[in-house]
Image (cartoon, rainbow, N blue to C red; front, top):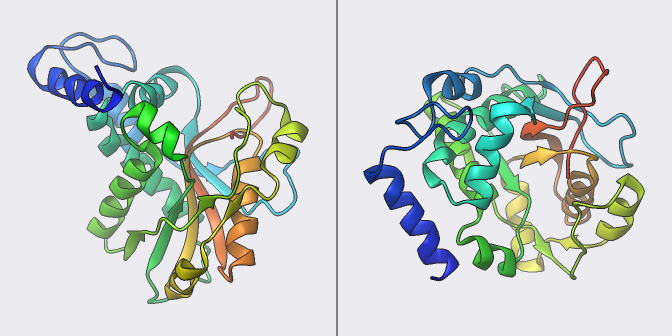
Length: 243
């Protein structure tokens, strides 16, 4: 069974077979009312890493990366639970609203949501591009409240990078340095609106910092970054970050 077919098969089962909530295990629903409410009713707040990498814009997260939220993000990202994009996108939209600087809130220029890019091999392996899907859902949610937001997929990988999951903050910066770029033929699009970087998760901020560098080098003006969730440092007053 190919990954793409498995993803479609899983989505079909979500519709046909009673499920358990991916967040808390409540039976007969893919996402229970409590877990859905935690996402769609989230209150975003600043989520800057304690040792932020150079060039990282201000980051806002809808919630922390723990408990049911972690399980919902993993189910959507790794197991192709596609219907979860809507509540996750709603949470991302909350973070985007918080990320818009007050000085930019009254401008008429559209809001350009630029997602972190996935490599073609990763998209093939998962059967979908989860960050792009979340960004589309967030853009729809924002437009529904009168915010002129749209997806802009302009970032590309210039070279291969190592898996980040086992790397510390310093090694992540080294791994990603110079890895992203905006193709020359896409650079004109950066001047057509206000840019918010978006991702599902932030830990060290290395990926967002590299993305901001690439967009700035191409002539883009990044206002801030927004994510669904940020990793939580135990014993700290606030949220830290991922990726």
